Length: 327
Image 1 (tube, helix red, strand yellow):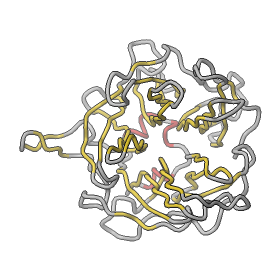
Image 2: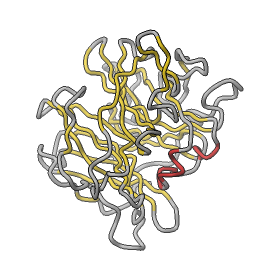
Image 3: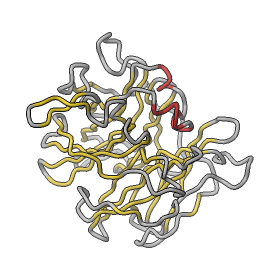
């Protein structure tokens, strides 16, 4: 998860079972992990995140002062939304590389807050494990039922639409359709959430995302007055690429911008991202490259790395890969 902050750029990423943090002045050249470890798995036996934690999104509420030297705002509050699991497989570098394996890994969303982006305190949600949402039973008309999110509620990405209106986009594995879908939850305070159903499902037969959609990252497009979602699409053979969808209000009517992915794995068999491109994070810029999309790539050797692609102009018509691995 990449975030522009006054004075620099911040990158929270998964490193084994924990969350690590790196800083940059330009979003292209990144330093070593910042110590101490920002967030590690919980030691509470009853918690939902005892095996591993993975960052999903950060909301930054910043004051007027910033430290340009360190890249950290000197007056800010960070809200880190993350996925946690009691399954050790969740700590692997890139479990999304195998759709079948990823579907079986339980995960729930959590929240931690910080005043410096490095030292975190967990905020307990309403679920009995401390998670913000549960994956099993839902209430409908006073009667419990088994929700489509029974396997997991993973990769929470949060948009602050307006005061008292926060939207969380997450994915789960629907046991009925046997593929991933992206759902929506809403909140007034960012801690207590209510599910609002699916917003995007897998595509038609033969499409790049017919096997399901997941890891959706939503951005409010300031120039076009709409919402943009970049997401992982899984094809019939389990190959993962990145697609894009748009919505006028961010709640309903999500439609694919193209029947083709906006970013594919490299055609070079020896490329660092020749097997998978996924976990997209979209950043709207102010200048030359109007959009950046940070993503995780996996090569044939199974090694994961972080790269960037950019799109010029406001239309988001085409993404070009940056010519170097970032981390």
